[in-house]
Length: 368
Image 1 (cartoon, rainbow, N blue to C red):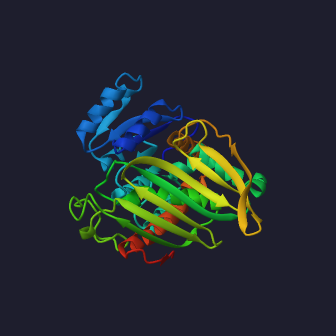
Image 2: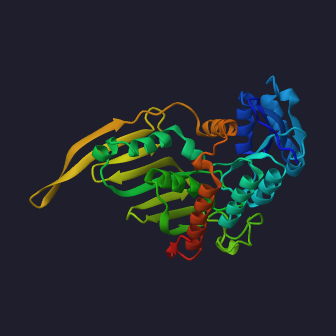
Image 3: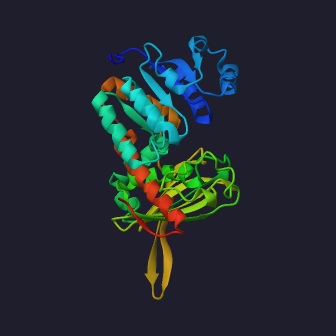
């Protein structure tokens, strides 16, 4: 099969899945000079009608066609790439079909629900000479990027010192999903950030939580065949605490909940001299360093050298920046490691081990 040539021209792209995330992709690719949105695929015609009402006045909307089936969209003549924003349980078959047709693929996280499947998709992309870009969105957030750069600079030594531990909270009031629990929905973001900032991956994990809303009911869409998922009869966890243990001795604990009106999106990495804090909900200063040490005076430990500094960040939205990088990679022929199938497989295996621990009331699980 002849493969689409991206060249220097806008890449003809179809968005598959028109839900909340897919609608954002439609907006981005409609306006992006590096892409031409040619189709949107979704089995729910109401979603297409909603998009038409929202973007109908856009000058490029008239050329966008509706397709009811994602696999049908892959056969559109002249298509160069697809952006997939469908439930992860169907990613493997859809990504495989897209790559086999010679299409570049941008796909929502997680790549699949199985690490070995991620590896196979990565191999297939290499064999086909196509790009497989996994949208680990937060790794493209300006504050996360700035935090990684700061941690690799000399400022880290005086501003943070030796790593001690990490902690985070990602809690809000909905949306509640019926295909995965809160762990599979949210944990990948914080795990990805900690891995990126520490330049490391956990050697062991544990998780525990509670279920209030879907106690064994409303779980018809859950993939019941995976051994790495808690028993569906137990329901879908609404609250999960995750602990990550790294080979360096650093531990990180993350609080996840979609049934809490106290909205928080905050992650921190603490050392013996200070703490690097990413607070996504702070518009003016999303990345800061709080500094201070404890000085022993007799039998007392007193605060010393306290202060706070703001780490500058670039403007921009993480999803838009991820799309920019995807299209730039097509032009340059490179693959950003943050979006690679290898990174995706690593994260999925960590999630799988964490999910096993959740199903076993917090038993420690080693990462294979």
